[in-house]
Image: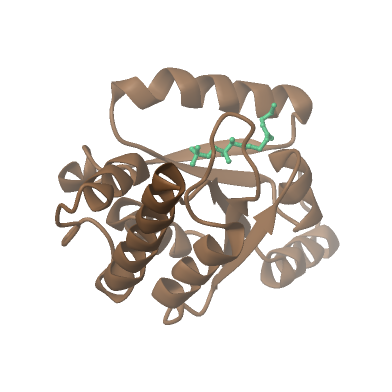
Length: 189
Ligand code: PNS
């Protein structure tokens, strides 16, 4: 497009006023250091980054409630002024559009993530061709890290130090212990 002086001014104004919003979706059950690293890095690419917590996943049975997962993320991102934490139910593309965004951010750890993420990115573009997914490569030191690993370690009494942000380590252990106690009481009774 050839820009005239008038359209150039309009274009510049749009750029100045338009907020670039990115959405980083996930289950975050619970947040790990790998997630936090992606949040930190993605927050530098957008004016506003929304961490979007999936309320219910038909395939997974989350250990933490949606409120707990949101609270844990809020605790760790309180010093990141352009990061907001939200939750969504239903289609991700609808949440993305409703929040004035067209960019989904995802982290990639290894080749094993690729196939699923490729399918999701293509599916989301099929639903809405205006939505793009960008991928940030996980830091090598987080390549083995997942929420499942953290939950399993905590469940069996292993240390999760260094795998989750310091400020939520105790919250996670406490929550897993409480659930474990409840579970053993149920199987005894
Ligand atoms: O933490 P995860 O498991 O990688 O997160 C997966 C998530 C939340 C990104 C994905 O399950 C999702 O987008 N769910 C919302 C439903 C949806 O829009 N699915 C794609 C089209 S069927």
